[in-house]
Length: 272
Image (cartoon, rainbow, N blue to C red):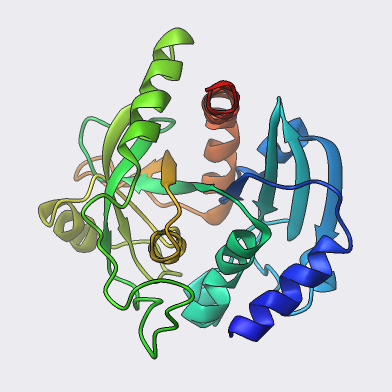
């Protein structure tokens, strides 16, 4: 795996001129943030040695290098999921590669189902913690060049970045929630009983991604910021039939607010 990561990163370096400092993973219906990136250098996943290929609508399958305001970024326009049949090593491979390329922090976004009764469609929730119901991506022999055998997860999401997000939101009069993300395998949307269970164990939102990438990022020593857009409601009495297309549409509606928060956060980080 180590040699494969080095090889992939070396290939990418031959195709780009910009040194990224922040990695961004864009979830379902949230790929529009990539349109704000300037001085773009784009690579299709299918052209990158060792990269999986996105198979889900709303995940374009591109690695975009460029500037988000003044910040040098690499954005994954589309991620990979366990339900697509990929292994955890494949799902998290791009995070390892971005670390090898020199990123200093990772931003992750996703569309999610709301479990908290105070949430509505379009709620933006900063992820403060997660509950992992997916296979752990660190299972198997540990490579000390990646990180320690038993990484600490007492603060999986960076507290300073969370504070910065709320400062930015306040400046732009954007309402933000903060809570716990539950990561499940998918691809089925949850039953009413499952929604109730996930709320009882401490979840505020639920989705089918994000947690594996965050675990690997923390294993690699990268600070992480995560944000969810609530695209459907899993609260008793409010549950309705939902489709993937519905999730994409709701994500697109709230995307402009998420884009403002991430863009302004990166600008402030660059100016510190």
